Image (tube, rainbow, N blue to C red):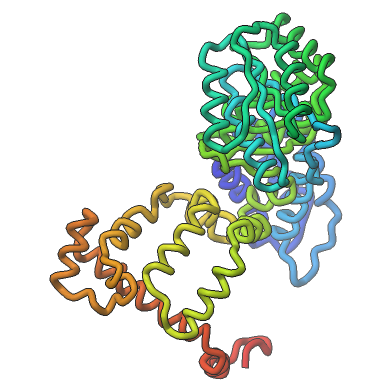
Length: 448
């Protein structure tokens, strides 16, 4: 996500590295590089120019503190302007009404149906809502079936009427069904077209006028670059939507749409899709996204993802097992499962400050833990509980059963042993105190 833009901005800031002060000359050079980086990322020329000019204006005349380098100050200014460009403050989805009605609009292929399912899943699991999905696409043959498959996948009811070819009537009946059956949110998935046309606009306008949604979301494929911005403008002029959803942000996208769309239509980006799975949906936070673009990580989002998977009772039980030196491969497997639920491993690592840039050329598969799980699953229950039982012949059997080599299994066993020792030490307060005492004295009065 935004790797290309991050690299180019990083190169732009290098102009100021080693410089003793900010001057009009080096600021002009750096802002020109920033504008070029934005244009390469498919940001519109007007947006890129006004952004670079704003950064330049902010930077000129700034006093640089002795503890801050010009490059650091310029990065801070760019960060603040990026956050401002993308909306500065996070905008919540409007769930007022009984039921609350959310209308989904966009072009065909933008990912509306998949997003509708992701949003229903998000509202169900994170907002404790009881959503109803309404299949309003009467043109695409598989659209209704696709929505039913998505609904079954996430455990959310879908309202559809294959005999009815009037999307306005279907939306109205769906809302009536929701009121009668205790659904507090209705998500209406509508038809898209291959391009913006008058018939499509008339239809979506008629639906909106009839059902009066509390929230209208425009879904756009971020991989379409500037076309995404032009489409957003056309839709906004006709239906005056409330927020934007960027899908496929995990793909080969240069990210320009995310930076341009907010300034062009003056509507907040509310969600971003980051994968195919139903939980691959992130709430959009402009400041956090600015952090990630500039390689500062996103610790807040990482902690939030961890908290979502945190089970207090499990954690208490694990702590007791660690203290008693009973941590085994069953516990190890459980920890892997929790990490996987948090999302894509490479994206998670990119949220750690400084790690994103180091990992950009490293290919981490979504199934990075698959071979580890295969080796653990090839162990007997007794071997998982007591890895010391795993001798030479057992190692050959486990390696063969998991399709891995004995060397890979040996590496896993060694890593597990080291992890167990570290956990035991961390679980023992006396050992932790001893570790702190033995820490070397750090410069500047830190440490012992």
